[in-house]
Each structure stands twice: as structure tokens, then as C-alpha cells.
Length: 318
Image (cartoon, rainbow, N blue to C red):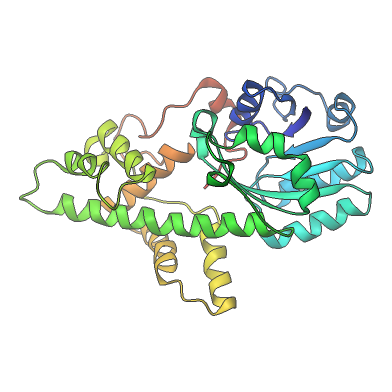
């Protein structure tokens, strides 16, 4: 199978590498010519076998809408577009309708796994027609984690369902990160505690709060004891806000997710040990830029390769 991949950023580039390692032929397009396999979308389309499959992995909003509009002009009837960015689910219907006018099929796919997906695999949540999902299954199987398909992949429902599921996933993520961060701050504040990093590490096996996020918290505190190199300023990608808006519209109580979103706003007003850990965690799992604390030598977080530095924020997950 040969697919096109648009957007070779923090998510797209390792996805291309994982797909190729699993036997999927990939031609990528990016505005950075050093990373791109094609000089234009037209050239990319010409490289692919009909019916074409093209995966879009660019920032949500206007960037994604522009790519969808361009693909409507260069692809043809029967081709399939998979939109894998962090788009709001309400955008999917518009994208699908624009492409359908040209006979082009559409799937939306929520993708989780951050910058570690290349080695660990990506959690995938897909919305759209079942026949289209089946056709693209070799791609999904190559990207998802090893093991049973149902443990890392779901056909979530109709168009928009994949991105809706990813929105809720990220809302939960906000709450989990905030809980770990507040626990960290409590430990830091107590004089009788002598080894905060050791306590976090001891929670990794056997406890009911063990998780990958906890593992990353241990990594962050180990790499930067006291998180002295991290400013307690935390951005939000939008999906936490969307989750709160959806909860309000559906009259579903979501106090934890709501509080976690508002806590990020608080982080922009004052320094906090808890928000330092949230910032560090975003750097660890997503490669998000971390604000450097005043007077520190370098921001904490997972070191970036030269390719990642060249990519900037393109396609960054929450």
C-alpha cells in the first residue's frame, strides 16, 4: 500500500517513519523541502496509485481547512482523505461535504501518543463509513500499538466521532495531569518529605494511580529536580475548552475537566509547583515548547532532534 502524508511535523514525521517500518509506502509533503518527498500537492497526488489515500496531519483550524480545499482540487473521485489532526469535530462535516462534492471520501481520526508514538504506537479513534475504515485498516494497523486491535483502535462512529472521542480523551488528560500536579505540589510543600522524586517513582508499579503520565512525571522530575528550569505557565490546545463547552451544551457535569482548564489560566498569573509539573509533562509527552524559567540555562523536557527542531509546532498533539 502507498499513501500520501501531508504535514511532517512533530506527529507527522515519526508517523511516516513508523508506517515505513511496518511496510507501508509513504510519500510525504511538507512546506519544509528538506523533509518533503514531493514539491507540491499536485506532485504528491501524481505519485500515488488510484484510488489514493492521503493522510492530513497539520494544525487544526484554518491550516487544515486550507489543505482540505486544496485536496478537493488535486484528488479525484474515489480517493480517500484521512484527517488526523486535532480538529474540532464540528469541522469534519464541512470537510467531508467539500470533498464529497468531488466524489472524494473522508475519515476523521483522533490520534494519541505524542512524540513517543513512533516507538510505542498511536491510539486511534476513527469516524466515518465502515467500508472506508476497512479499506484503510492496513494503515491503522501499522500505526496502532502492538497487540489486539481493540486495545489501540476503535471505529468510534459516524463522521466527526473520531475527533469527538479525541476531544473527550484530551479533556480527561487535563484532569489527570492536574491531579498528579496537585499531588506533586503537596509533597513539595511538606517538610517531612525528603524524596519527592522517589515517591513518584514508587507509585509506578502496584499502585492504583500508576500510568504512563506518572512515568513521564517521574522522568521530568528526575531530569530537572525541583523543576527549576520550567516556568509554571501552561498553554491549552483548545480541546479542553471544547470538552467544557460540550459538557455545558449537553448539560453533563464535568467539574474535574472544567477545573483543570481554569487551572491553566491561573498558571498564567503566578508561579506554581503544580503548574510547573503540568508544563513539564506537556514537554515530555507531546514535545510542546516549555517556557524557560527566569535565569535557567535550558527548558526541561524531552530533547528534540534536529529534524524536530526544524519542524516547529506542526501537527503537535495536546
